[in-house]
Image 1 (cartoon, helix red, strand yellow):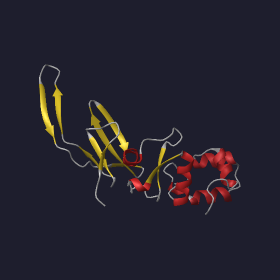
Image 2: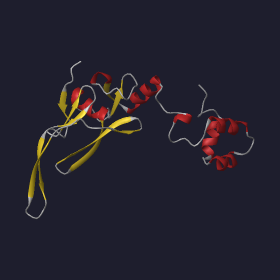
Image 3: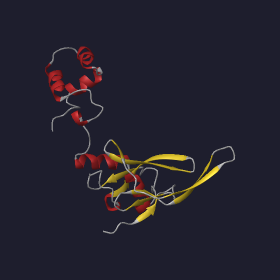
Length: 178
């Protein structure tokens, strides 16, 4: 497949995104004003940008005309190749194959939060239990909680969670073995 480039929405003339999920700056002339009457004009060559990663998703920082923006690459690709966000409800970009490193337009679509959540559960990419970055407990802790005869508030203090968390664990509403 040949690589095709389209302008990044909102940064036309400064950045482009490709159908292979890459982002580049474009060749341009930059005039720098020092505020004391001096200015300098510099020719900047375009280059493929390096990604940062946030929660496994590729991000890129773009700057133009005094604006700075850090965007998710999958959102930039989807907006450029699949069109802008169609409705306010479809505010998320879903990966059809569940692989959030595959940022090709064919693999991306606009989705509602509920659709995106269903996709993540279907693909097994939803972080539950020990895989969650927000977790305070392990499966061993959950086993100890269920086996303990102590009152919920005492157990909650011991593990640094709320009594409601303990109640939900004991009632098998959360931390359910698959």
